[in-house]
Each structure stands twice: as structure tokens, then as C-alpha cells.
Length: 521
Image 1 (tube, rainbow, N blue to C red):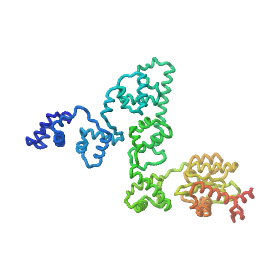
Image 2 (cartoon, helix red, strand yellow; image 1 turned 90 degrees about the vertical axis):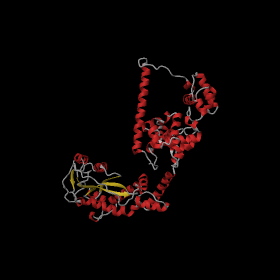
Image 3 (cartoon, helix red, strand yellow; image 1 turned 45 degrees about the vertical axis):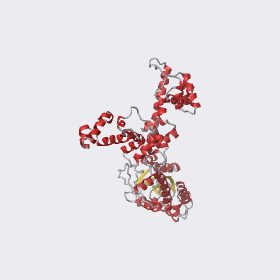
Image 4 (cartoon, helix red, strand yellow; image 1 turned 30 degrees about the vertical axis):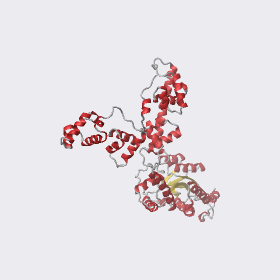
């Protein structure tokens, strides 16, 4: 039997059996079906309010917002049980307290109740358009005191509140009663049907756009990262950003995100906790330390330094998580990526066969891709084509990705510079050179393709020699100066210009490659 089914007479009978007839708690439970905690609660009611307290109340009790929050705070402190809390604050039952806790944990607003407001919200009445206008004017004149206005005009609190909202949104016409029978589809004119269809399509498109944008944000396209531990914060951040950038409806975004609108606003107005503030401070210190040691610290050594600096222990997983959020990573002993072996789509024989001499320009070309590092362990890639006749760089391309377009654009640039040339071009067996796209470019230009043997880098010796010269004479001497991609590109372009036009070579009769090429022409 539930608590609400127990009459005052039944309660007195059970208490009498326990106190005067010598029944134990277990016997009371078996005979009357009453739990021992319930029996103890009834005894406390009698001690506090007398026998009349067992009758309960015939109407719902009202509680203020402050009292609800005080009860929730007491329970969350861990010093009180649910029974202790309801006895301390005079709450009718533990189920009422549990409902408040559920609302609080669900980020719903804790609202208070008052007897005066409950009287003004009991029942509304029918009103005319003119009456609604006068009531709204009265509410605005009283600084939106809905309670006072409702009592003065004998309407409900909710009616006054809704009328004021409608007036602020749509003016006085919004207060008209537009209720009534809607037209059936047969009664609609073609223009009305068209308007309804357009409105439906617009709403559907708006929702599809919002869904597409929202899930992109949640998947990680959103800039910035979460350093707090608030549940569903990724969704709240996505809603906030889409509302500010795309002007989507908050209600629509909350529906897509499957979160309550009140929960979103509670998160929006939340005060950062001490742990959130500490995370912000840790991020600043980690970035400073990362710069100070030139990026050689991983999360373990970073944890040790922060523990000494703040004089308190930190979990290494927390430091690891914050480093990932800030994009901080050690530049030494990084885990190497494992690449799966792939079968080349196009393979050519070693037609060059280490014959690195040429009798005329554009007879034999060699090509390759090399890697450079700049900034904090960022990478750039240089693709170049070298003419074996004079050792000049025919064309080159620099990019932040080692992909097919890098190699293809280098070859296209060389063919544009020497449109009539049909040389033998030699490369290694990199995936760009074995791709169908590179083979198509070569066949289309009427060129022959030669490839190095597997594990024989000396088969492409002249190109490897140029990489060594470039890095020794330029890159390694000023490596610390290349903080940005632009600085690195400028240095490479400057050296290739110097190499082609100003760097004299003994094997070229003390001429630069371009001078030697010009004399041959």
C-alpha cells in the first residue's frame, strides 16, 4: 500500500501496536506492510505535530525558490539523508525532494510558488479584444507586475503574461482572437495552397540547413575546444555558435540537439568553476613552458614541471587532455605512423641505368620530392625537376602536403617552359610517380619514363645530390630562422635562383647552369 493510501486511523493503529502491544519492527512490517523507516517517520510527526499531524493536509503545500534551493544544497552536502532534509524544511514527502533534485540535475529552472500567485493563476475568463488591450496597458503601466494586474482585472496570471508577450512580438493586432475552424484543403484557393506549400518547404529547408550545420560543429569542425567537464558542452557550444553566426532559432537548435532550452540557458549563464579557471591557467603555463624548452617536453615531463610550479599533484591524464586541446605536442621521439604496403599501379624499367650525362638540353630529366621542417615541427615539401645536361632546375613546386597535385604541377610547369621537349624523365617509385595520373601526363607529352630500382637511391643520384647541396648551403645554416611557411618558401626560391644563375661549377667550365645552357643553345 502506498503512503497516500494510509488513513490517519491506520497510522494510529500501527503506532499503537508498536508502542503499546510489544510488536517488533519486523513483525510490524510483516503484519501491516509498513516499512520501518515509514514507522519511524510517523513517530517523529506525532512528536512534532501531535496525533493531528497524521491526517496530513487537504491541499498542496507551497514552497519558495529559496527554500527549495536550501533543501537541495543540504542534500548535496552529504550531511543529511532525504528524511532529514524533509523534516528540517517541512517538506511533505521525499518524492517532492526527489523531483526537485531531478529538475536541478536536468538543468531546469527551480521556480518558487506563492499563495498570492497561485490564486491569480487559478482560472481565467473570456475577454474581448478591447479588454485585452486595456489589461496589457495596465500591466505595462505597472512595470509588468503580472500578479497585481491579474488580480485587478480578475484574469489569470498566465493570460496577462501571454498577452504582454504577444503585444511585444506583434503589436495590438496580435491580441485578436484568431481561434476558429481552419479551412479544409478543398476550400483553399490556389494562391493559399501555394503560400502554404512555400511555407512548408521553407521550414523544411531551414531545418535541414540547421541539422547539417549542427552536426558539422559537433563532429569537430567548430574552432576552439572544451576545457570544462560539463556534460553535453559540445552541443551547447555548437548551438551558441550557430545562433550567433547563422541566426538559427534557439528552439530549433535545441530540438535538433535533443537538449532542453532551459538547460542551454542555464549553461549559457553558468559561472566558471574553480577547476575551469585552473584549467585556463594551466593552458597558459603549458604554452609558455612549451615555448621555453623549444617543444621537447611530452605530457609526463610537462606534468612534473607543473606539479613543482603549482606545488600540488596533477593527474597526467588531465595534462595530456589539455595538451591535446591546445595542440601542444613534443617534437622529439614522436610515434611513427605505420603505413601499409601498396601495389604500384604503374612501374617502369630503369632506362636511365645511371647514365647521368646528356648531350643537349631537355634530353634527360630527373625528379624527386624532399621534405623540410619549419616552425614547431611543421612540414613543407619541395618537388623539382633537374636537367642532366647542365644541372639546372627546370621547374619546382612547394606545398604543405606531399600529394599528387604537387608532382603533377611540377611536371606541367616544366612542359610549359619547354613545350617542344620530349625528354626521358627518371624518378623513384613514390606513389605519385606510379599513379595513373602521372603516367597519363607523360604519355600525353610523348615522354619516356624511367624508374629507380627498389632500395637503390643512387639510381637517382643527381637529384639526391642537389637536395644535399640545397640543405647544406642554405637550409641547415638558417634552420632556426624558418618560423613560418612563408619564410621557408622565400629562402628556397632565393637559393634556386642563386643556384641556376650565380653558382659557378667546375664541370660546367666555371659557368653557372643557365650560362652553360645559353651557350649550348
